[in-house]
Length: 452
Image 1 (cartoon, one colour):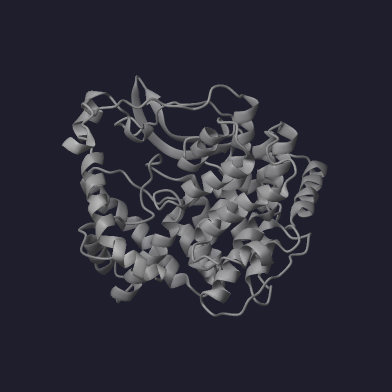
Image 2: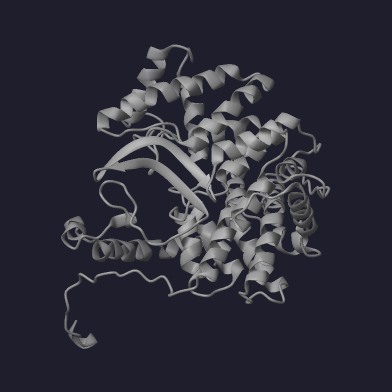
């Protein structure tokens, strides 16, 4: 009996059991208020419950005046350095910034030229996979989802590490640096294998030269001709920088802290964080933005007609168009309200790329949607502005990045923050993170099987 027949045969029983799970697993929402449970570890105001301390990332979206939360322009700091000033610093010098950002996140200081050069050389030295890893691991079980491929590869690398369970700072730092260095290879090679075996396209496995930046390495391995423009590489580099960290409270970074607190190995921790990032409520929103805009472009005749664009956005909000969720993807954020600094940065660099790619009309459509969407959402008393996903998906699309790599690109950047938080958790090792859950089920007597 093949697997498909076996699945169909067992499906009715599984569906019946699933219905029981849904019924018995349901908890009355009123009980959360009764016992003052902060669902999602957030207060009703939207402010997060304080569960830890960090020096790595800081998100600022409001000020407190006389006990009242007052929204303000969003700010993001990496070890106290304003993200916008960081980006301004390396772009004004004409440099790539991701490697410098990784250094800042891991070591809490801005590197000198010599320190940055030595660190960049170290990452280049680590940018290689074990012999035959691509053939034996990545090619053996191609997957349509690159995040699962990436997680599987990370867990397998544990088997190649003679000191896999050593949680001393020096060893964990070495493991993190190696993973930061090879994440682009694991992601792009995983995509190339998927593209070949599952879609029938040609297979390209390019070995990147060591002198390339992380952003250049991604484009070099991805493109069949290995070519890219300076603007393309610089903009992808900025995307990596703005995704590298977002405080300790986001879901995947909190996962990093939780799993690290158990004392387990680095590979297990990063695999768990990848699992978190894969979830559509965390990573992957920029994919939905691109898909939403594809539908808008197909259904709006005049992209510059504000009334026509507004009418279609109203259909989306009223659950009559796109995926009928009522969401305008890329607008609004769990923390930011007035502005997302990452969105402001990427927008400022997106227009030159749109000019280079002859896609200015699309860029202007994005600007128009960014203008209209918050006014529609305000009807629901939701302050909203463009978030980082709004323009990043458009940028990735202009760079020719396949949708399958959107979330892995996020991971290639965010492992920098995960690594810093893992080390911080181990250095300040305390109790295992174990929040309380209250059981609200009624006690019942055991009934012998013959009497049920």
